[in-house]
Length: 291
Image (cartoon, rainbow, N blue to C red; front, side, top):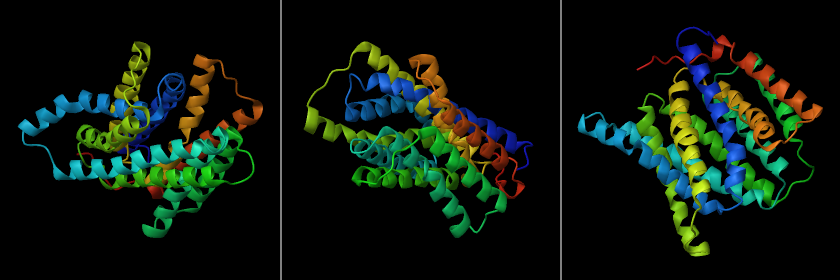
Protein backbone atom coordinates (compact mmCIF):
# COMPACT_ATOMS: atom_id res chain seq x y z
CA UNK A 1 0.00 0.00 0.00
CA UNK A 2 1.26 3.42 -0.93
CA UNK A 3 1.45 5.26 2.38
CA UNK A 4 1.03 8.70 0.89
CA UNK A 5 -1.96 11.01 1.14
CA UNK A 6 -5.09 8.97 1.71
CA UNK A 7 -3.10 5.85 2.62
CA UNK A 8 -1.59 7.58 5.64
CA UNK A 9 -4.96 8.99 6.69
CA UNK A 10 -6.65 5.62 6.34
CA UNK A 11 -3.96 3.66 8.17
CA UNK A 12 -3.76 6.21 10.99
CA UNK A 13 -7.56 6.21 11.38
CA UNK A 14 -7.84 2.42 11.52
CA UNK A 15 -4.92 2.09 13.94
CA UNK A 16 -6.66 4.59 16.21
CA UNK A 17 -9.92 2.63 15.86
CA UNK A 18 -8.19 -0.57 17.00
CA UNK A 19 -6.61 1.19 19.98
CA UNK A 20 -9.91 2.77 21.02
CA UNK A 21 -11.69 -0.59 20.73
CA UNK A 22 -8.85 -2.11 22.76
CA UNK A 23 -9.58 0.28 25.63
CA UNK A 24 -13.14 -1.02 25.71
CA UNK A 25 -12.27 -4.50 27.02
CA UNK A 26 -11.28 -3.58 30.59
CA UNK A 27 -14.15 -1.06 30.65
CA UNK A 28 -16.69 -3.68 29.52
CA UNK A 29 -15.33 -6.20 32.01
CA UNK A 30 -15.89 -3.68 34.82
CA UNK A 31 -19.42 -2.77 33.66
CA UNK A 32 -20.54 -6.38 33.20
CA UNK A 33 -19.97 -7.04 36.90
CA UNK A 34 -23.09 -4.98 37.67
CA UNK A 35 -25.10 -4.78 34.41
CA UNK A 36 -26.54 -7.59 32.25
CA UNK A 37 -25.52 -7.92 28.61
CA UNK A 38 -28.85 -6.72 27.18
CA UNK A 39 -29.00 -3.56 29.29
CA UNK A 40 -25.38 -2.78 28.50
CA UNK A 41 -25.91 -3.14 24.75
CA UNK A 42 -29.03 -1.02 24.29
CA UNK A 43 -28.04 1.66 26.81
CA UNK A 44 -24.64 2.04 25.14
CA UNK A 45 -26.35 2.33 21.75
CA UNK A 46 -28.92 4.83 23.06
CA UNK A 47 -26.21 7.10 24.49
CA UNK A 48 -24.24 6.85 21.24
CA UNK A 49 -27.30 7.83 19.21
CA UNK A 50 -28.12 10.69 21.58
CA UNK A 51 -24.57 12.04 21.25
CA UNK A 52 -24.84 12.21 17.46
CA UNK A 53 -28.45 13.42 17.20
CA UNK A 54 -27.56 17.17 17.18
CA UNK A 55 -25.29 16.55 14.19
CA UNK A 56 -28.05 14.60 12.44
CA UNK A 57 -30.45 17.53 12.93
CA UNK A 58 -27.80 19.91 11.56
CA UNK A 59 -27.22 17.74 8.47
CA UNK A 60 -30.96 17.36 7.86
CA UNK A 61 -31.64 21.10 8.12
CA UNK A 62 -28.87 21.78 5.61
CA UNK A 63 -30.26 19.23 3.15
CA UNK A 64 -27.21 16.97 3.37
CA UNK A 65 -28.85 13.83 4.75
CA UNK A 66 -28.26 11.10 2.17
CA UNK A 67 -30.12 7.84 1.69
CA UNK A 68 -26.78 6.09 1.27
CA UNK A 69 -25.65 7.03 4.79
CA UNK A 70 -28.92 5.80 6.28
CA UNK A 71 -29.01 2.58 4.24
CA UNK A 72 -25.34 1.71 4.72
CA UNK A 73 -25.35 2.54 8.42
CA UNK A 74 -28.49 0.50 9.09
CA UNK A 75 -27.22 -2.53 7.17
CA UNK A 76 -23.85 -2.41 8.95
CA UNK A 77 -25.73 -1.93 12.22
CA UNK A 78 -27.72 -5.14 11.72
CA UNK A 79 -24.45 -7.04 11.18
CA UNK A 80 -22.91 -5.33 14.22
CA UNK A 81 -25.90 -6.09 16.47
CA UNK A 82 -26.10 -9.73 15.38
CA UNK A 83 -22.35 -10.15 15.82
CA UNK A 84 -22.56 -8.71 19.32
CA UNK A 85 -25.49 -10.94 20.26
CA UNK A 86 -24.04 -14.16 18.79
CA UNK A 87 -20.65 -13.51 20.39
CA UNK A 88 -22.21 -12.94 23.81
CA UNK A 89 -24.53 -15.94 23.51
CA UNK A 90 -21.80 -18.26 22.30
CA UNK A 91 -19.30 -17.15 24.96
CA UNK A 92 -21.68 -18.51 27.62
CA UNK A 93 -21.00 -22.03 26.29
CA UNK A 94 -17.30 -21.79 25.47
CA UNK A 95 -14.13 -20.33 26.94
CA UNK A 96 -13.15 -16.67 26.68
CA UNK A 97 -9.96 -17.65 24.84
CA UNK A 98 -11.92 -19.67 22.27
CA UNK A 99 -14.34 -16.77 21.81
CA UNK A 100 -11.51 -14.27 21.29
CA UNK A 101 -9.75 -16.49 18.74
CA UNK A 102 -12.90 -17.40 16.78
CA UNK A 103 -14.04 -13.77 16.73
CA UNK A 104 -10.70 -12.87 15.16
CA UNK A 105 -11.41 -15.35 12.36
CA UNK A 106 -13.50 -12.60 10.78
CA UNK A 107 -10.25 -11.72 9.00
CA UNK A 108 -10.52 -15.02 7.09
CA UNK A 109 -14.04 -14.25 5.87
CA UNK A 110 -12.99 -10.77 4.73
CA UNK A 111 -9.99 -12.18 2.86
CA UNK A 112 -12.23 -14.80 1.21
CA UNK A 113 -14.55 -11.99 0.07
CA UNK A 114 -11.62 -9.97 -1.27
CA UNK A 115 -10.11 -12.92 -3.14
CA UNK A 116 -13.21 -14.75 -4.41
CA UNK A 117 -15.82 -12.02 -4.89
CA UNK A 118 -13.66 -9.01 -5.73
CA UNK A 119 -10.86 -10.96 -7.41
CA UNK A 120 -8.20 -8.85 -5.68
CA UNK A 121 -5.61 -10.75 -3.71
CA UNK A 122 -1.86 -11.11 -3.52
CA UNK A 123 0.77 -13.45 -2.19
CA UNK A 124 1.75 -10.83 0.37
CA UNK A 125 -1.80 -10.69 1.73
CA UNK A 126 -1.79 -14.48 2.08
CA UNK A 127 1.36 -14.21 4.19
CA UNK A 128 -0.23 -11.55 6.39
CA UNK A 129 -3.29 -13.76 6.89
CA UNK A 130 -1.16 -16.73 8.00
CA UNK A 131 0.99 -14.60 10.33
CA UNK A 132 -1.99 -12.79 11.85
CA UNK A 133 -3.87 -16.05 12.53
CA UNK A 134 -0.79 -17.61 14.14
CA UNK A 135 -0.30 -14.47 16.22
CA UNK A 136 -3.98 -14.43 17.21
CA UNK A 137 -3.76 -18.09 18.25
CA UNK A 138 -0.69 -17.45 20.40
CA UNK A 139 -2.22 -14.30 21.91
CA UNK A 140 -5.55 -15.88 22.85
CA UNK A 141 -4.33 -19.48 23.49
CA UNK A 142 -7.70 -21.15 22.75
CA UNK A 143 -8.46 -24.61 24.13
CA UNK A 144 -9.08 -27.65 21.93
CA UNK A 145 -12.51 -28.96 20.99
CA UNK A 146 -15.53 -27.47 19.23
CA UNK A 147 -19.00 -27.07 20.70
CA UNK A 148 -22.23 -25.19 20.09
CA UNK A 149 -20.80 -22.08 21.76
CA UNK A 150 -17.89 -22.04 19.31
CA UNK A 151 -20.36 -22.36 16.42
CA UNK A 152 -22.39 -19.38 17.67
CA UNK A 153 -19.25 -17.26 18.04
CA UNK A 154 -18.17 -18.32 14.54
CA UNK A 155 -21.50 -17.10 13.16
CA UNK A 156 -20.87 -13.87 15.05
CA UNK A 157 -17.44 -13.67 13.46
CA UNK A 158 -19.11 -13.87 10.05
CA UNK A 159 -21.29 -10.91 11.07
CA UNK A 160 -18.21 -8.88 12.11
CA UNK A 161 -16.71 -9.60 8.67
CA UNK A 162 -19.95 -8.47 7.02
CA UNK A 163 -19.76 -5.22 9.01
CA UNK A 164 -16.24 -4.52 7.69
CA UNK A 165 -17.32 -5.28 4.12
CA UNK A 166 -20.45 -3.12 4.36
CA UNK A 167 -18.47 -0.20 5.78
CA UNK A 168 -16.08 -0.55 2.83
CA UNK A 169 -19.01 -0.50 0.40
CA UNK A 170 -20.62 2.62 1.90
CA UNK A 171 -17.47 4.38 3.12
CA UNK A 172 -18.17 7.48 1.03
CA UNK A 173 -21.09 8.22 3.38
CA UNK A 174 -20.99 10.89 6.06
CA UNK A 175 -19.10 9.02 8.84
CA UNK A 176 -21.13 10.50 11.72
CA UNK A 177 -24.54 9.95 10.12
CA UNK A 178 -23.49 6.43 9.11
CA UNK A 179 -22.39 5.71 12.69
CA UNK A 180 -25.64 7.00 14.19
CA UNK A 181 -27.75 4.66 12.07
CA UNK A 182 -25.27 1.84 12.70
CA UNK A 183 -26.17 2.07 16.39
CA UNK A 184 -29.95 1.94 15.85
CA UNK A 185 -30.47 -1.83 15.30
CA UNK A 186 -28.80 -2.64 18.65
CA UNK A 187 -31.71 -0.88 20.40
CA UNK A 188 -33.72 -4.06 19.75
CA UNK A 189 -31.99 -5.59 22.77
CA UNK A 190 -34.30 -3.57 25.00
CA UNK A 191 -37.05 -6.15 24.32
CA UNK A 192 -35.23 -9.25 25.64
CA UNK A 193 -33.90 -7.09 28.47
CA UNK A 194 -37.41 -6.22 29.64
CA UNK A 195 -38.65 -9.75 28.98
CA UNK A 196 -35.91 -11.55 30.91
CA UNK A 197 -34.86 -9.00 33.52
CA UNK A 198 -37.64 -6.41 33.81
CA UNK A 199 -36.53 -2.94 34.92
CA UNK A 200 -32.88 -2.94 35.95
CA UNK A 201 -31.23 0.18 37.33
CA UNK A 202 -27.68 1.25 36.50
CA UNK A 203 -25.37 2.70 39.14
CA UNK A 204 -23.72 6.05 38.39
CA UNK A 205 -20.17 4.69 37.96
CA UNK A 206 -21.33 2.05 35.47
CA UNK A 207 -23.32 4.68 33.57
CA UNK A 208 -20.19 6.86 33.27
CA UNK A 209 -18.20 3.93 31.88
CA UNK A 210 -20.97 3.07 29.41
CA UNK A 211 -21.05 6.74 28.35
CA UNK A 212 -17.30 6.54 27.61
CA UNK A 213 -17.85 3.37 25.59
CA UNK A 214 -20.72 5.00 23.69
CA UNK A 215 -19.07 8.32 22.86
CA UNK A 216 -15.45 7.22 22.40
CA UNK A 217 -15.54 3.53 21.44
CA UNK A 218 -18.77 3.73 19.42
CA UNK A 219 -19.30 7.24 18.02
CA UNK A 220 -15.67 8.25 17.54
CA UNK A 221 -14.25 4.82 16.68
CA UNK A 222 -16.94 3.78 14.19
CA UNK A 223 -16.85 7.18 12.47
CA UNK A 224 -13.08 6.82 12.12
CA UNK A 225 -13.61 3.32 10.71
CA UNK A 226 -15.90 4.65 7.98
CA UNK A 227 -13.41 7.41 7.13
CA UNK A 228 -10.36 5.12 7.26
CA UNK A 229 -11.86 2.43 5.05
CA UNK A 230 -12.22 4.97 2.24
CA UNK A 231 -8.50 4.46 1.64
CA UNK A 232 -7.83 0.95 2.99
CA UNK A 233 -8.94 -2.31 1.38
CA UNK A 234 -11.21 -4.39 3.67
CA UNK A 235 -8.70 -7.26 3.68
CA UNK A 236 -6.00 -4.92 5.03
CA UNK A 237 -8.47 -3.33 7.45
CA UNK A 238 -9.36 -6.75 8.87
CA UNK A 239 -5.68 -7.41 9.64
CA UNK A 240 -5.25 -3.96 11.20
CA UNK A 241 -8.26 -4.59 13.44
CA UNK A 242 -6.39 -7.54 14.98
CA UNK A 243 -4.45 -4.87 16.83
CA UNK A 244 -7.57 -4.64 18.99
CA UNK A 245 -6.80 -7.73 21.16
CA UNK A 246 -3.18 -6.56 21.41
CA UNK A 247 -4.29 -3.14 22.64
CA UNK A 248 -6.82 -4.82 24.93
CA UNK A 249 -4.04 -6.85 26.55
CA UNK A 250 -1.93 -3.73 27.07
CA UNK A 251 -4.78 -1.74 28.63
CA UNK A 252 -5.86 -4.74 30.72
CA UNK A 253 -2.32 -4.86 32.11
CA UNK A 254 -2.33 -1.12 32.86
CA UNK A 255 -5.82 -0.94 34.35
CA UNK A 256 -6.53 -4.44 35.64
CA UNK A 257 -2.98 -5.74 36.22
CA UNK A 258 -3.55 -8.70 33.88
CA UNK A 259 -0.08 -9.88 32.80
CA UNK A 260 0.78 -11.22 29.34
CA UNK A 261 3.07 -14.24 29.16
CA UNK A 262 5.95 -14.71 26.70
CA UNK A 263 3.70 -16.83 24.46
CA UNK A 264 1.16 -14.00 24.23
CA UNK A 265 3.86 -11.38 23.65
CA UNK A 266 5.17 -13.39 20.70
CA UNK A 267 1.62 -13.60 19.32
CA UNK A 268 1.22 -9.83 19.63
CA UNK A 269 4.53 -9.35 17.79
CA UNK A 270 3.38 -11.57 14.92
CA UNK A 271 0.17 -9.55 14.58
CA UNK A 272 2.20 -6.32 14.45
CA UNK A 273 4.46 -7.83 11.77
CA UNK A 274 1.45 -8.93 9.70
CA UNK A 275 0.00 -5.42 9.99
CA UNK A 276 3.26 -3.93 8.77
CA UNK A 277 3.33 -6.22 5.73
CA UNK A 278 -0.35 -5.62 4.90
CA UNK A 279 -0.01 -1.83 5.12
CA UNK A 280 2.78 -1.82 2.51
CA UNK A 281 0.98 -3.93 -0.12
CA UNK A 282 0.50 -1.53 -3.04
CA UNK A 283 -1.89 -3.92 -4.80
CA UNK A 284 -4.43 -3.45 -2.01
CA UNK A 285 -4.61 0.37 -2.19
CA UNK A 286 -8.20 1.53 -2.41
CA UNK A 287 -9.04 3.58 -5.46
CA UNK A 288 -11.24 5.98 -3.49
CA UNK A 289 -10.84 9.72 -3.36
CA UNK A 290 -11.54 11.64 -0.19
CA UNK A 291 -14.89 13.42 -0.34
